[in-house]
Structures are given as structure tokens and as C-alpha cells.
Image (cartoon, rainbow, N blue to C red; front, side, top):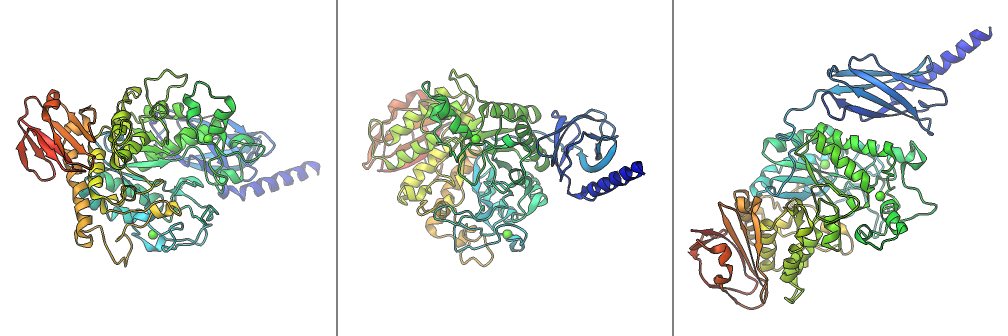
Length: 627
Ligand SMILES: [Ca+2]
Ligand SMILES: [Ca+2]
């Protein structure tokens, strides 16, 4: 009788747990055969699947070995370490979970065949041959008004009259304008994060602010359905590749949205960086290069939270690290992207960064990335990428967002010339490139989604605009244009960054103006668009700019001259940043002009003799030299 009762109880227990099997989820959601990363740690999440007993997970799928199963302090998790060997073929793997001998659940795990073309048709990396266009999917174009909001999500407000709320832009809108981007000379799209941000609007001043920008991730494996979901994103990447363009995905390793399912039900107490009180990061990257820095300052930099609604991940916890590493491999292979821009790079555990870059390089040899490193010095920027500095930790990402060159270009356009001001700042900044192993992998830009728009910074001065575009598209590095700069979108972050993230006019059904077309743009906007396009298209064919060397001459009275050159081509970039007409004495540039007799203005195609000439105040030009 006692035995019968126990059997009934066991049956009931097993029924109870089985009834929940549909809620067992696993991460990664699938994997592939033939990956270098063939030891996968599957994080299994389901009510009480870890429990208090001894759990065994097994499968009879050929070529899959379960190494071990680990329970954690949270009974809702199991970590299943598997090895996928060479015998494994694509198919659906069923993993069964037992408590001792009693079955308590199971989950499916698809093993897919890998995509073809690693490094040639996807994971191609981005280099100085590319021209990146940074856009925010919510603000670029709304190609599908039916996906603007969903009642099941925490934020259901779509309001184009408020720059801090969602506007309905999506992946379909981007696909609809790929020809526009290609015509502009863009080679690579960088979208702000597309993964799910199921967060309510947050009370950030002047709030409320929604997660339209994508940096409040709540599910790493799901593309936000307001942007179109996983399938549309995957299709977009395929379409982009067919057009001969590339895609960079924006990753956030450092933190997640506070509504992330694994924050609401953390697998371990130390899954996120905990403090006895709220501790925000101090944002000062100097602690990494400062020989006098204290340990507590270093700890607050990496373990302090970015803001209170973005819990900081403990990337020293190997399970957290595995989760992020596997997700990054997964997204690259699943969607077929070409590279990564890594948000808030300087806030992550340093050893984790080195580790994930190694894993990515092993799996995708041509894939590259650049980290977002806001910094106050070239030394700090260089510290976070491959560099020539003697440091205990050697960083390994290909490049960084080059804020120092950005600030220097802005100074060059705006500041009065002086020993350390104006174009001298640009000259001085570039002279410090010796700290980098290869500054050509740095992403250079005049502005981005976190900055005042460049047109406003330069007082809407079109001469300065030309100077900036000339430098952006001819200096070393990978140029990045922020969406709308080419049609003279402007604004400062006052009162909020929503002002520099306004909708691209013409991207929404019923928009009164359509600036995607020449007829929809004003004369001035067409001048700007054509200026960028002419130089970007020239750049596409210019080996000297894409892969050549740089030689700069000391600026004199605001006149700044540099050359890009290789054995096939020499390009001269001249800027008179001053307020007076200047004579350009060519004799000084002999080292680079020897053997050439003429110069061709790449904007007008006008050919003139290569001899002394004068430049108007604020005039700038790009010239191809002719023998
Ligand atoms: Ca939409
Ligand atoms: Ca951190």
C-alpha cells in the first residue's frame, strides 16, 4: 500500500512537471554542426526543472554527448554542457530531463547546417574600404505600420510627435531604402540594436523615454517584433548582401534592461554585479591607463551600473560569459551579419573582452568589430584596441569609435586656429597614432546618435560641412555617417537626445516631404547629398584613400594639407580653415607631389596645373594628382 502511494505520488509529480514542458526554454535556442565552438553550454530555464534532486539530461542523438548537467542555486535552471562531434548531422535533438530515474521534462534543440560563405558572403568584417551608415531602425523608415505596437508588450505607445517615444520605424523601412544608401556610396549599415526591448517607458529626464533605441535588451535571442522579428531581420541581411552591402550589428555585453527575463529570475545571485546600495559607474576610462589608479575606482568603472534600469552583468561569472559569447556567435551565424559594434565597451570586464574576441576570431576569421570607447585621450582610446602600449592586459578588438579624431575634426571646423587649437588639434591627434597597432580599423565620424548633430555644431555653415565631409571620407579609418547628415538634418541634444534622433523625412507613409528623392530635397539639401555621394563614390574606387598611407604637413595659419597615397594613386586634401584667403605654396609638398604636373578637383572634374594657387577663407578641396 505504501509502495502504491509512493508510485501515485511519483506519477503525480511527473505529470505535474510534464504538464509544464512547453514552458521549458533553452539558450542558445539552437546550434550548428561543424562549428569550432562545439562544446555548448545550454542554459535551460523552466519552473523547478533544477529542483532539489539529482538531475540528469540525456539524448540518444548520434554525435551529441552530454558532458554533465549542473544545477544552480535557482531551481528554475539547469546548465547542460554538451559536445557536438563530427558524426552529428543536422536535425532536431530531443533532450530528456530525469530526476534520478524519473522523467520530469524534455526540450528540443535544433542542430542546423552551417551557412556557406564564412568570410566571403557573411562575417566579412569591416575595414577602411567601407563607408558605414549609422541609423536607428525606429527613426529611419516605417515600412510596415501593422507592426508598430503589440498589446502584449510593456510599452504600447507610438507617438511621432514625441521624440522620446517609439515612432514605428522598422526593418522593412530599411530594406525599402537600400538603393538610396547604395547610391549615396554607403557600403555598410550599422543599425542600433534590433533585439527585443520589452521595457516600459522609463522616467529619464525629461522623460518618459521608451526603448526605441534598442539598448535596453530583454531577450538576446529575439529580434523585436516591432522591427519585424527574427525572420525579417535575417531576410534583410540576405538582401543587403545581395546588393553588395554589409551589416554591422550593435551588441551590448555590459548590461541588459531590468525587465530581462534572466534579471527577473536570475540563475545565480552573482549573475549581475551587486552592490549594497545603488552604485553607478563613474565613466572615467582613465582608471585603465592611469599608473596611479586605485582598485576601488577600477571596480566602480566596470561593476558600477550604467543607469538604475540597466543591471550590469557580472562577466567574470563563467556562466554569464558563456551566455554572452554563445549569443554573439549565434547571432553572427543565424543572421549572417558581418561585424560587431560593441556598445559601452570600456565598462566590461577586460578578460571577458579578450576572451570573446578570441572566440569570435576563431569561428569567423574575417569578422571584425569596433568598441564604443568614449575617451578623453588617444592613449585611452588606443588602450582598448590593439596597441603599442605596455599594459598588463592587451586588448584585441580591431578598432574603437575614434572620439579623439571626432573631437579634433569638430575643433578643426569650429575653433580659431592656434598652437593647440583648430586644425592643429586634428594634426596633433593624428600624430599620436603611433599608440595604435592599426588605426585604420578605427571608426571615425563627425557625429552619432549620442551627440549634437554636426550641422548644428558648425552653425549650419556649408563651407565647414564640406571640410568635415572631406576629412571624414579621406582620413585613415572607417568613416561613419550618421543618418540624415547627408540631407542636412540638424539639432542639438537640448532638451534631450531625442532631438538628434528625429525621423528621416519621407520614411513614413503620408510624410509631406520625401528627402529620399532628389525632387523631395531642397537645392541646398541636394548640394549636401551630392557632395557626400561624389566623394563617397570617388572613395569607393580610390586605393589611396581606402588602403594607402597618410602624410600630413604641419598646419600653417589654418591651412592644413595632407596626402593619401599608394603606388597607384596620390590624393591631396587641402583645407583653409581660416577666415582669410591663403596662398598655397606647393613647393613645400614636394615629397608627395614630385612627378605630378596636374591636379583634378574630384567634385568638379576640373583639371589644373599643379602649381601655387590660392584658397578662399574656409575653402577646402580633394584633388587627385596627375602625372
Ligand atoms: Ca512599423
Ligand atoms: Ca560593467
